[in-house]
Amino acid sequence: MKIMCIGQSAYDITLPLDHYPIENKKVRVQDKVECGGGSASNCAYLLAKWGMDVYFAGVVGNDYYGEKIKEEYQKIGVNTKYLQTSNEYRTTSSYIIANTSVGSRTILTSKDPNIKMDKVIVDDNFDFILLDGYEKDFAMEVINKNPNAIKVLDAGSVKEATVFLAQIADYVICSHDFAEEYGNVKIDYNNFDSIVEAYQEVKKKIKGNLIITLESIGCFTCIDGLYKIIPSIKVKAVDSTGAGDIFHGAFLYSIANNFDILKAMLFSNITGAISVLTIGSRLSIPEISEVEKIYNDIISK
Image 1 (cartoon, rainbow, N blue to C red):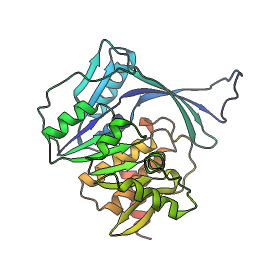
Image 2: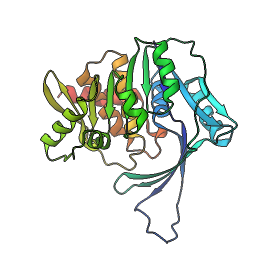
Image 3: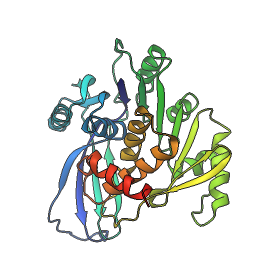
Image 4: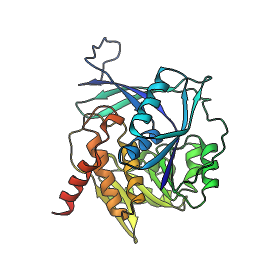
């Protein structure tokens, strides 16, 4: 079983603070945390860490950050056959302020607007494809080469490529921001009907299965005509960077291992929740044994 993750690869530099900085003030930072990042990239890293045969396709620059990212992939076991190194573009980098008092994060991303994979021949067959809305042309090459592959879309924000890919994905896992904008409905976590309405409006526009992630609340879908919130576990977050990416990676792992949809959603909720306990997106991916233990404890009650 082969999995292809296609999209953005970035290098993250996180500055943990116990409060959000005041403008026009000097702030002393005790430490910084560095690791690779990017939506599809984090998914690939999780899948490799959990023992799956996974490839990543995207672009890094021929620079220090690009080399660090490639070292991480090599160490964890991500196949980088389709990872391109560019002499023209620098590696995308993100500078993250992690407000550890509330677990929120503010991300400043430096990305060349023209960075894109060169055309490449796809000569591998894949069973699952993870998409994050970047590298649309290459994504279509892989999809056309593998028409029977299960396609999972990380729909984080409404942009042209993401909307296009949402029409052909088997699973669209969207953020509540995407659901609000694409469905033109304001979601109120205290109003279940608003979540249902947003789901219905987005579902009208896509053919595949739809799941809306609701941050610390959990995630939402419709199963056999019944609307359900699958709750997350309660944790004290210190850094939410990458939690959504990690949810998507765990979800793909779940369906690749034939979990039913409810188990897949709960398993992914648990994984994402554990991740917010540690600073740094890729560094916060838990061991699968930790997720399994919490999952088994929950369903045994």
